[in-house]
Image (cartoon, rainbow, N blue to C red; front, side):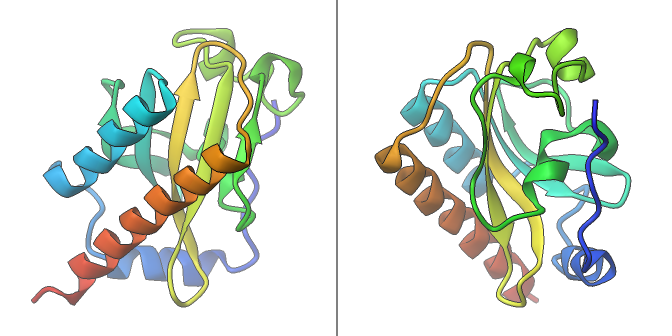
Length: 165
């Protein structure tokens, strides 16, 4: 297992994340609706709006998942924030970075991951809109476009949160 890397702009990224004032806030329908739509649209058992903090990946919304956070060092999202491009793992059991990851080797036995970065206007990738499945899969151009549009909706909602008094 390869531990999730740290972006070069980590201090700036964490500062931007904390300025959102959203970590550890209660569930909100506006995020839950997007996650639920993503799960339905892509026919996956789990869709999550994740925010990557210094030591954990915290889930603002988690459709199909009973936990609210996971250690950052073993998170898929910790890898996904390293690039602006969608991070797709068609079969985690065949990927050296994840084959022995506890989320893959143990419950819930993740096989597929797709994460689209939540990039703020200042350029910081603070989290992901991500999909998980228990079977291998691929994503075509259309699916990636839909995921990107849903990701943009999440970012809009994050920014609305910071604009409120």
